[in-house]
Length: 413
Image (cartoon, rainbow, N blue to C red; front, side, top):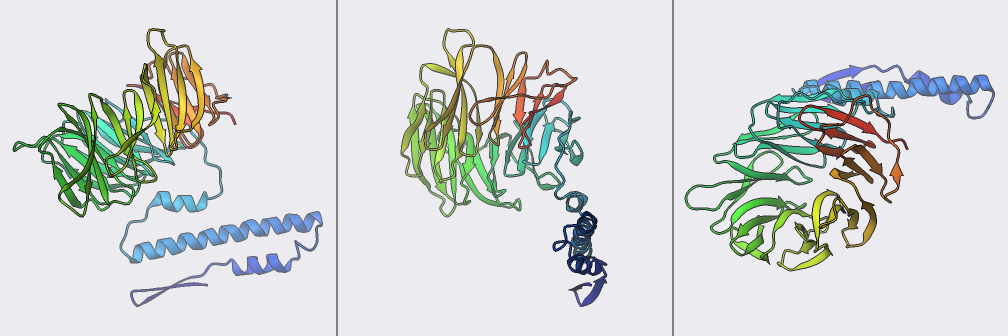
């Protein structure tokens, strides 16, 4: 018997699993290896496991109802599907309007478009839909959470695969946004009153906890450290790109790093607390003292695209003046070359996730493992023609998508 006491009320749920458990142990199935007893023991083990799952489900329902919360059906269904291999769908159907962009939530796929948010699990079942309007949809994801925002608009939504966590409207037009692994997020927006932009920091409950208004340099993006204590702001000045560090315990700006005459196109925190700056000709590691060092230099080659997954940085580098000739390289946080792949044809998009590299060529996708060895993939009845981007998923699959289609390709391992 399972007994739960909450708010001075007794709730009893009788689970008839004790008899099955004891009879399984007493049956001597582990002592006698006769086929009949082994088969009977397996059946009892299955019943015992199902009873324990049922117990957990009833406990979840009781506690949830008593506490006045809403039952999350996806969570409840996962109790009964535990241990069952997750099946990836052959095709995903998203209807979020135009300007669609996608993000990997780790166990689901999020799509954001002009009509709002839609999330599908890897099996293709919808787990979240949130309708609202956006003109220029954008999305950033980290550790199972995502932030959707309207570039040059005012709408922001933070969500996971089951619910919208925070919904807010900014006072000024949004430039960019990011989210860290703890669900804290930063929204950069244009500003009035003579400032060159602002960065507002929100905690995982959606409360504004910090704000910076730039008096010089035009703000491009911002990133919050994994420990929620430091903010890095990327801005463009008349002398080049600049990263300025701020402590959330102080209003004053801290140290800064400048790249005279250079352009930093992306910036994010590394696992050790330093910042990785992606420039047009190198990867640079910047510490909070404002000191930078080259992690990997590729001057003389063009950056065709890049994908970052944890501590692995994958770059598509083009040889100038030689058609589509180039290389795809994988670099570790320590600057070690993990693998390289020569390319001679047009590459539309690359994406790296969970040790798998997905490449979208003009004639279709191709997949490689962490050592850049080719992996076969299943053929699809729907062509990937018209797709302009590819997104690798943690399930050993990838989505090739464009304005009107999203086709799933699965690798054969």
